[in-house]
Length: 539
Ligand code: NAD
Image (cartoon, rainbow, N blue to C red; front, side, top):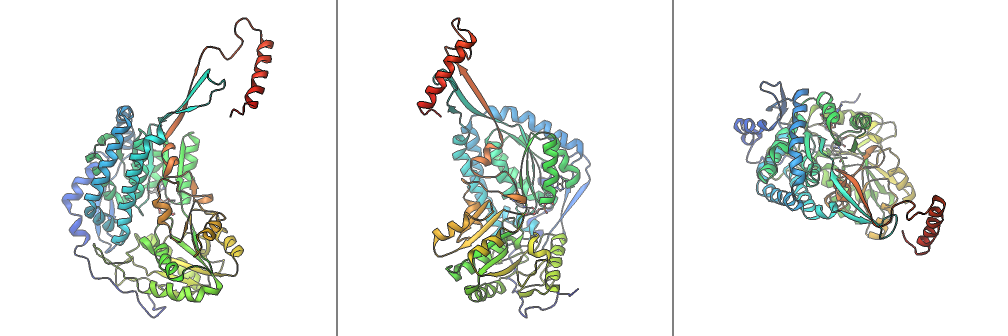
């Protein structure tokens, strides 16, 4: 196999950003770790999990792990707190979310440090987490009561049957979240659950527990009862199923492989679940696109959080007539991206999070190059910057047998394909079992929208990469096909945490024969009434 992990493939190396003012060790002090880990539901002398700073590979923190019994305790505590919380007026709950919004912005520097230290992402990508979480807090605080309010529905007998649909909290939500967006996914999926009156038990990834714990502290400072949000930590296959087995609803974000197991387990218990899973997202640069804007957008689309973003673009389809011009712009921008390995602003891309991620990226690129793909930018690890750095990489000429063609890489690697007509582009974009996010570039927004409607993806951004759809939290976000079941954001993102209950009050006449009428007479009366209701165009 070709060794391209350290060789100089394109002849140019991505520059390294000026070091930020602080390192992970400056920000994540032993005192901070000692305070935060008290927020884990764990026994007196727990076993310890380890998180490492991806920039250096050094141990960042030892995290107490929960036992199976601790998970049971977490659910008991959350359940007790939930009963009182569900009685609190919606206005009270909304105020907690709005105070959290302000605390999030006020404490952002500390959160950005923690996110960078735990994930190795650039600060600008960590900031996306702060901003979208603030948007989610504001949205569910302001719109939550509207989503949840009781609704009058037409009764079976107009005027005589008065029907109200109400929304009851599910109880305690079991949330399992990944390491890649430890603030945004962790808080973003829990906030609507709280607004709807639930408790939550969350299992974050051990690697990013500190960000989760600090976020929870802020929500408690904002007024959330501390017992309502329990954090359990541990090995996914050990602790994860324990969470699923006790939850009244499961909110899972992670890989499609794990998601299938979790969904089956939840289904066996007859509890609902939302599954936010992987993708192999496509971007289409149409012949009428503004190529400078498209190239700029492609950089954001492919390399934000070093491509460790569920909605990241990994397949780029470009109209043949503009492909050379577009690629000249895109590769120049990509080669100029500055890699950064310290805390602070100024870097364009950070590190991968773990050796597992790096190995996957190496495997995908090596195999594609071995099968004949050309490297237009990047294509190598950068151990001189940090043990897990990999350059933003553009491949062309990837064949269908290479894993990078249709499997999720979850790293800073995009494959470019030229297309001859939009039919072909749409067919290729829709050719994987996934369906999470897509991006379409055209100078004509109407044209972009028409193409968007033909794409098999839960979100489609026209003239933007992913943030327009993801950040518009009043509208649903989630995956089709192997990318998931259910949605976050919008009405679906909060109503999934509720049980619909129908309360029907019958007035004056019963739903059966009355005043000495026999069954046949009642059937005749009802037949006339049904005909009249249709004629009156009642729904
Ligand atoms: P993963 O599936 O390995 O792990 C996700 C979480 O599940 C972790 O907390 C893990 O500990 C836990 N887990 C592992 N095995 C489990 C089991 N048997 N039962 C219950 N829980 C278990 O995923 P990952 O590598 O941490 O995250 C990356 C994946 O997540 C990518 O595929 C990415 O596309 C996806 N993702 C999707 C979205 C989305 O919104 N669709 C968002 C972020 C990430």
